Length: 338
Image (cartoon, rainbow, N blue to C red; front, top):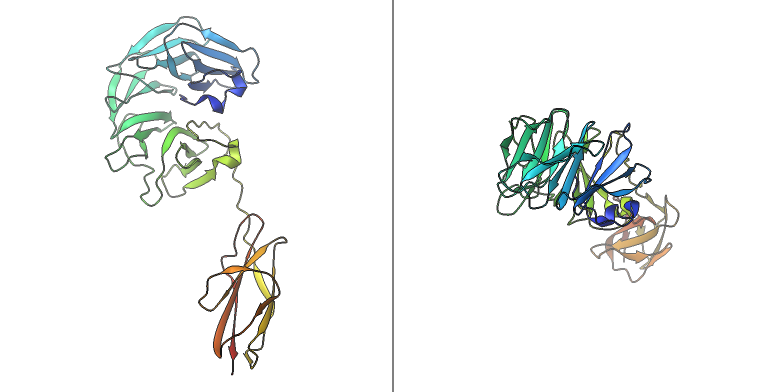
């Protein structure tokens, strides 16, 4: 996986370095790699053995990706992908040369993929650097982050002035059947930056709304939004990564149920009545409504005074401590006879 992640996401884990990219090796290798200015750093998965300049003097490294045998990187403003052996030897800063600035990089078992924001293309080459195709996919906007799985390539569409700005695109690994707006939902726009794929879902970081968004790989059929504040503490997310385990989903709190326990007679000659009500969840507050008036905060018992002759409708809604309202307020009708 390539990564173009702001420092605040993992700076504490790697001693406050200015991180611009991050990649995880396979579990057997047990290393984390990151770009750090003109070098690539490495540490164990537990954060030990930190080497800030494990691969040094390679230009301003941007994105990084690894497989079982090699590490790959891009240089900000450069037009090449660099490669080294997984042990840091055999450095080749121009392993694959491009026709323009290469930004993000991803790798699978057969190919290396990269984005060219200036040409609005996604390129591909064999793992040994042969058969480079600089225009495997032509995107509508400047392609941002990149992810691959066993069947597809996914990319962030950046830029304005076209229908699918801010959508995740998808294509087959050979570049065919490109869908520029794979996740496009007009009624629920998102502003993705980082993208990742795994565990049967697509994930992206929405930097504008502060969400991590999850979608079923079929597209937008099961768009699921998680509050970033509930996961990472706070911030504007730009990068995202996922391992092979299912993403933890916390089911929403059930809404409270409001019940009226005491009510006036169906017909009364009194111009004042009293209602009592309870919530299924302790600690709830209440909102009451009479006829066409708006809901207002109230407590049980609720006394209604100076009622006019005629039919009246009373509603009460509980709101639990988490802020979840009862979607079906309790209601009652009665009539004042004179």
